[in-house]
Length: 328
Image: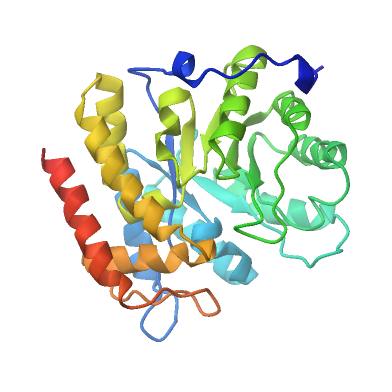
């Protein structure tokens, strides 16, 4: 059983530093749109290919891929296209959001979750059990029990704590509930997107005591250096430049001091892109990819929050900073 929170020792982040650690990176892939707001599937395929070529695991149908706004056909197409781009399935080579779109007050619908998970498993991808109102209703114990029940029908899965700054149906578990989540045998790890260092440090420390093989995937785009302390990552920010994240991680594993300059430059992008309103970060990523000449338009998905066009000038200076850090 998980240790009671009051029995946990205090957190010492300095003692948690993990120099030269091999980092597992998973990048949510942006779903680009044309200037008229139509999904640009060719550009999407290009982003999946670039992510995989960088040595980063692509994650499709995540928040960065507008999963809550897509219909079933678009979610299926994104999944199938990603598998076609990557090639024959290998363990851990593709991650996909398993997302049920419901409304506040909705009851948990197990049937719909299985319907969403089935094509993901069939595509040889690892499901991320995306938050929804029904899944997150009730007590923490209710939520973990549902995850365990769903997980029992899957080969393996990744959990997902998502703060309400991202989506209204988000939920951050208590420390005790997180400990219970780690006891689900085929739960490989969980993405933690509270945007809180303290909460993530607590999860890393709990993981180290209870189940060292469990992956804490940081989703903190405001503190991407959480990898220093033992987190792996599943980020939206990395969609803007997966090759830079891959280089950063190689430098950390090699003990190369260039890690710090590159991490700082990437964090500057995270700080700017993930300012309030946080969901508009997806438009910021589109602006970056368009400025880099990698997609044909910076138009976000219809109905998604927008950033002002004036952001492009600031983003251009951050792009220059990242490029300089890569060339150092």
